[in-house]
Length: 151
Image: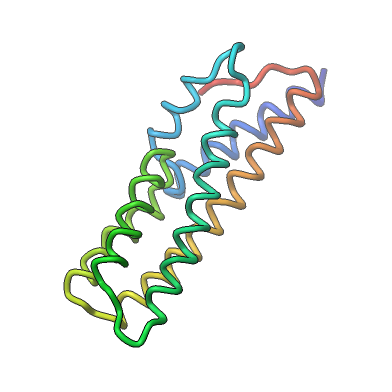
């Protein structure tokens, strides 16, 4: 039983740190609340779609910003999509950078756009690693037959 309690404590602490460090916001809590017995993998599935979507958009953004003449409308459309999908899972640090990114698009500021792209890639890979670790902890806990504690 000791192992289960330890894992629960670890999971709660880790989850709390993700909120405290601003990686996640209440939107993620709401996602978790939509998950139940009938749909135990709901959050993992939604987040996996976010990962696929983000990677596609980040590639599109890299390509779009690499052109001789940058189509800022196209760049802005991609950033807008990324902002939407990051906000839908509560990845608020990614979302915040997207807001600044869109301002650079509006100003047609290529330097600002390139800097934002780098920041967004960094924040995205951070939140991806953090969420993958969170899911691993949840799996370990399920495997240890403990219940996943809800905040």
